[in-house]
Amino acid sequence: MENEQLIRTFYEAFARNDAGAMVACYHDRIEFSDLAFGSLKGEDAKNMWRMLVERAKGNIKIAFSNVAADGEKGSADWVADYAFSKTGRQVHNEIHAEFEFKDGKIFRHHDTFDIWKWSKQALGLSGTLLGWSSFMQNKIRQSALELLREYGKK
Image (cartoon, rainbow, N blue to C red; front, top):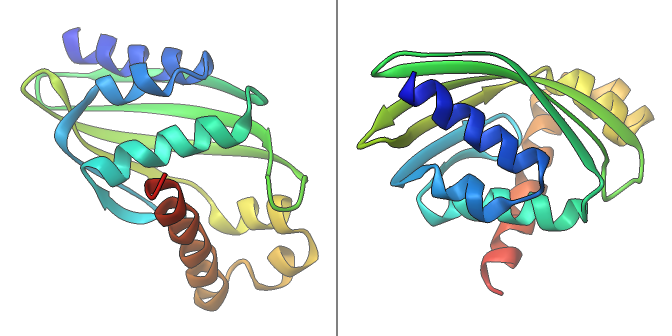
């Protein structure tokens, strides 16, 4: 129940656009991964959430469900509805999250989603035609990491 509440706290904070409360749920040595950013550790993982919340400027809707956890692992499903900042296109992204816990915090967090579906929504025609390809997926990751590096310099 403790770790289940930790997951709920994380997503409740996200729904309030409170990146500080989100990253407070993370272990100092957090390991995060998804298809858009790849693998991030520590401050990079925390800064990703700070950046995403800041860039959304309060215009992101977060819903979560199916939260489950035991002493070691947990999971949740969540949905993000927002306008992709580069194109202004509306995105409805359905994500499944897996967690591992350590010292009462989230130690590992892995998100999975359909990147082709995401790219169709976020990028339009180019995402529809190429979003399935490793070329486009690598380009998406490079762009996301560039934004994160710039954000980290602030």
